[in-house]
Image (cartoon, rainbow, N blue to C red; front, side, top):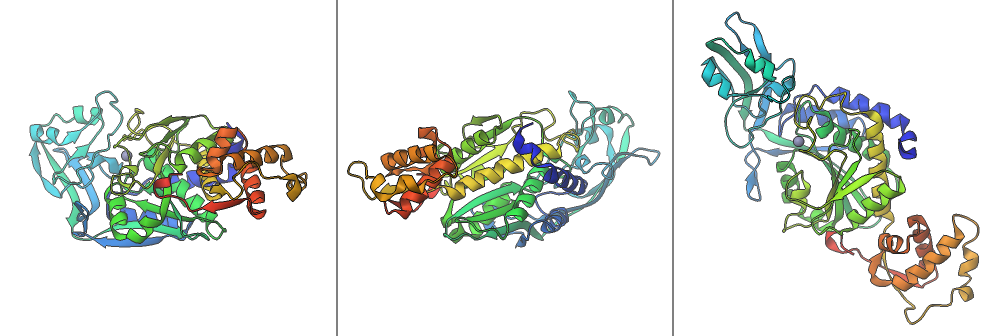
Length: 440
Ligand code: ZN
């Protein structure tokens, strides 16, 4: 394990405890499970809970009816619950409409989902936008359904209510904002996405009250409809966003995957690469694709906010994904703590990053005359800062931010940032505002 992770023993225990606490809650796109989850996260970070009524139009979509599940089962002729939602909330297809009747076996089997290749796992299925009912069971449970008829019950309400999401804005000294979002709509699944919920809540709590240049906006939202709802309700905040990241599947033992923003070279893409490298965390980088989580909405043509996605295992590619095997043993506090350290570093770099233009662009300015070499003193790495000054002055045509200067020079980001501060204080550079879409 890397040094970054070893330094994070405290968060590791807290992260796993939070995931354990949230694991039994039956979450979905809407409903009391999401509210209970957000209430638990509020103990860690002072987030605000928004309620948006069912039927509210959001772009091409509509906030759906609210779904709440009380109980669900399949009973055999002896009255035994052969499938029982009290044992796992994955047993019910999320957003199932209520049902209670006797069903012939053949018909019931069409409503029972299982995974023949993993006969002891329960799959996770949803039916958000098409009214139907269904159960998920292990293949062994499904194979044991041999009686001619069963009684089924899904005691749920699917009725007008509201969609709940959590939001925490930590202001900065500039109007620019960075988004950090994670989806809250999955029931008892740990990597996807209790790990993301836990990491963002702990980090937001840690960063609240600290000074920063760029505002940080944390969102805990149901997938797709939640990001669309936030985007539709907050045009002013959207206009201030200069990039961000979505977090999912950050609790398992796989190396990191960074999914790039739509354009692939947004500021956050470079911040993520630099952060993971600095922390010595092995990672792969993959191109943007229009599936996955809310980065799809943030990067749609009408927004292009410059949002990438941090994962460990990639959603949809590991066998445990969307099954009961994505459980408390599949994630660890240490891996979540490592993920937290990675996000913390990405945000630190985004906050420190800036683009400059030289105010003395005709040839090299004379640094010795200005006492700039003396100003380096002994702190940090004076030689690196001196080199960084030359690189900065050479690249300061307004097209390179500090992350690019660090990349191109091979120098440490902090040395580059220190050099920029010195040059700014001597009137040799000016800072330019950041472009939309996280581009520089
Ligand atoms: Zn998922």
